[in-house]
Image (cartoon, rainbow, N blue to C red; front, side, top):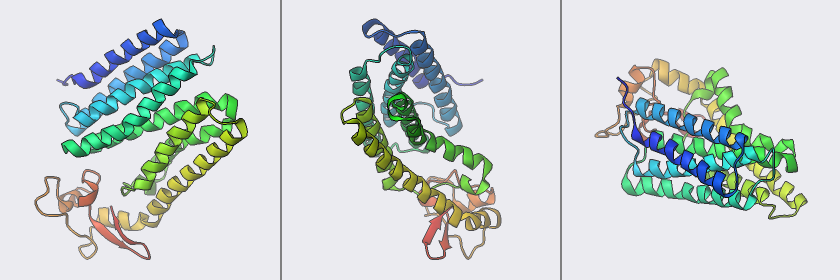
Length: 285
C-alpha cells in the first residue's frame, strides 16, 4: 500500500488557497485557475513520486522552504496564464517572483545549516527554478520577442537531448557558476517583466543573459562529451587502475557496490569513483 505523504498534499492545499486569494483580490479568470490547479496537482504528484523513490518519509526543513517557493511560482503561473486574456497585475507578479527568487538562497542555506542536503532537495530546487524561468519567458515573449523563449526552453532541451543521446546521461560535477547563471536568468526576466529598463536596454540585458546560459550549458555538454568514453568504461568494465574507492565510513553505498550494479548515480558526487581525463585532470562518474 502506498504511503500518503502529507508535505505535497499540504502544498496543494496551500496552492489552492493562494489561487483563491488572488481571485478575490486581483481577479483570476478560467485560464488562471486552470493553469494554477494543473500546476498544483502536477507538483503534488511529482513531489510525492520523488519522495517515494528516494525513501523520504517527510520533507526536510529546506524542502519545506522550496515548497513555499513552489507555491509562489504557482501563483505567478496562474497570473501569467490569465494575462493572455487581460492585463496582468505586474506589480504583484514582480513581488511574488522576487520573494520566490529570494527564498532560493534560503533553502540552500537551510539545508547546509540543518545537515539535510539531499539529491531530492537539489532536484526539487532546480526544477522549480527552471519552471519559473520558463513561465517568465512565456510572459515577456509577446513584448520582447519569441527568441527569449530560448532561455526558458534550454533546460528542457538539454533534458530531452539526454533521452536521445546516451553520452549526455552522466551526472554533472557541482559548479557554483551554474547556480549564479541560473539566478541571473530569474533576476533579468523579473526586471524585463516589470519594465524597469528601456526597451532596447532590456533586450541587450536579456541577450547577455542568454549568452551566459549558452556558455554554462555548453560547458556541461563539453564535459559530458569529453568524459563519455571514460564514464562508459568505468561503469561497465570498472578497471581497477582507474577507479578510486569512496572514503571509508560514509553512509552512502560504496563505489565498488555501485560499479558492481553498473550504476553510480545513487552515490553522492564526492563519493563517486574518479577517472583520469587527458588534459582535464580528474573527473568523477
